[in-house]
Length: 336
Image 1 (cartoon, rainbow, N blue to C red):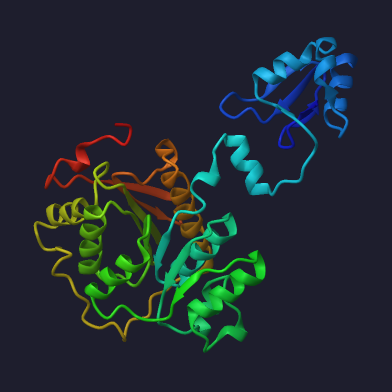
Image 2 (cartoon, helix red, strand yellow):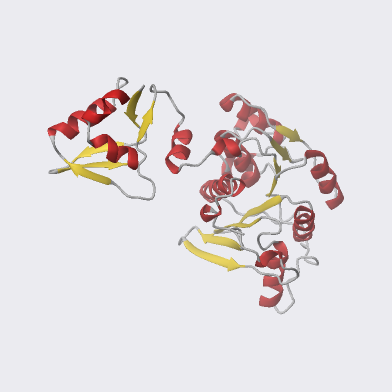
């Protein structure tokens, strides 16, 4: 068996030093720029590598092993995202088969579903009753002109199958009422729900209560004019939930904004302005939260106990700290 330098490690020769990148959490490693070190590193970047039996003849190996920069075995091809998880020392395989239910295949929900499949999640269900329109082609990168008139979930399923060779479960229907959503969740039994449909505040609260009661994580995603917003990422009995979000706005508006009573005057008249870069940034941030949240790496999940709002025009970030006080759940730490 042979040692080789991990594929994500990069080596740069400076004036008197050699810089090796790829030590997550430790910064670059600097060693002396000597012919011996250069020869060792050059050999470690070949298929042959350095035999473990001969490792005593290469003093540099001990330093590289300590920094986690060496691997044992033959060179093997890895996808770039797999290399990224290896670099972070994160086991994505522990979460890739988690059941994810996405409400909405529009700009945000459809893009989130596509990105989840791209990362390798294998058990995704997406619900939406709409068909693709020209506006969907204008503001997303997941639908083409040939998809116009096709059910969004069907067009999305076909694109995912073509690009990644995998199938997602689709539900080409609208939510008739909140009880319909509960029935679907009872059938799917998701580990996590993504709420990315046109805002129905009362639905958010009802879904939140269902998820907390049934120990299902949930994350909310949306965009409004120049702002994108995501969170809270709710971990039942560990974090604050949407009750905290509702309570936040009730206090801020002296009870005027209560999502259990809020309704739009018209759903058909208003056309919401949106653009692809807002949607793509939002969707990628949400997928990042899902990947690490499902794996319990909560130090990498920014939307625990808060909703994050980003003004894309200025990149000003606002964090709404949430705590509802209705129960003790949101007072618990995710590290407990």
